[in-house]
Image (tube, rainbow, N blue to C red):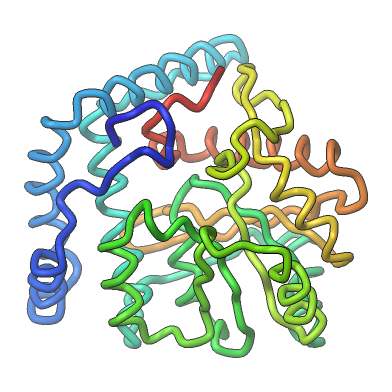
Length: 299
């Protein structure tokens, strides 16, 4: 969390032994005790992450300007508190993926778009999901009835390799399949197309530019500021010829999350990107401290 581009960030505080100890503490003492430990650890990490704190303050300033301009009360949080919120989300992610008892609870924004996605899943029809880094989308693997559908999620594995390896080796969520973004090739689209036709879900993040093609972007506005989204994600989604949904999983209390779903225009790339940007902005405004982009996101 110390450089200008998201894919140049490096894991802080990660290590196989340390993660193993934390998981051991969780199994003995529970998630609340673990979060007390993480509170102390993340505080030390945050104090050393000078540039991450700077990006957090820059984001909060932009957020507050937008809120004031729209007659809303400015949200106040410290950069250290922002980093701690990210650390807590990592705890919930680890617990959701690695503990079949699942202490994480879920509710849903029960709108027409959610009901459409639910109907697709129940009838074994696939869909393409575009997520953002608001909240904790990885915890979706523990969602009730998640074992009834396969989820193919793409992730930049090299960027958080230690944590990814730990989750993969301890995961009890066999229906959540992580595909390294680094392995994307010309045959990937055909594979995902077949998975979707078999009733599976495919998910990619739509708020971080491509490592291989950082110049291929689509321009949008979020919080009144210009920013770039990865054009490849929206092209990939459009090529699947299936319904496309924006999704976000936002923390609304202790170990409790709410799922938000919005149908996007899968036929038009610009409309899809604009709809996703609007969805992301609404998610950010509903949970400002849960947007975990510790890098220069806005132009």
